Length: 183
Image (cartoon, rainbow, N blue to C red; front, top):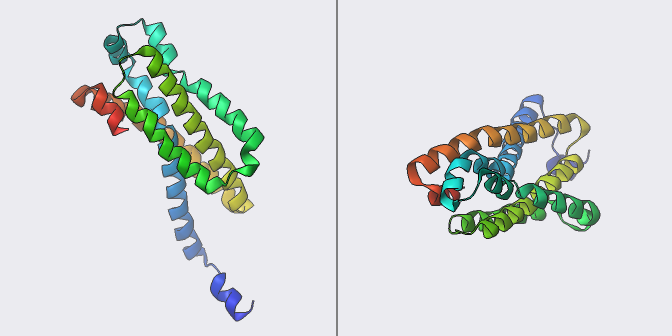
């Protein structure tokens, strides 16, 4: 290694590599958490949503789970056009855009609008999810990829568990509007 190569790519010690990987894996878990927390959070407050919209449980369940339709569409879109999308920018743009329908859910009183906003959430979630998986596979060595993907799955599981609990608590204390604004 020449002098400049050594500065640009210093040899990593096991301790330094572990600490750096730990920080990266924490960020990966956080991105995963933020990507899917909205998917699970709404499911925890189904009874309150049924009451607010004065619809059947089936109708509300369909509206809440409409996000999966958006996820399927975005997943196919990324599969066909993903080569043209910068992974890192696409992830952050998707997550930033996800905040828009989530915020709008706090102010809607129409079930159709609610379902459309959930579809839009699904589009954003799936785009971020798919682009993150692609990013991880492209930017980590085979030995690091296991840890990176494990961190992503951990963030996903945490979003499922904590998203539901947090959503139920926030909705119980502050109401549905505050709940959606929190997320």
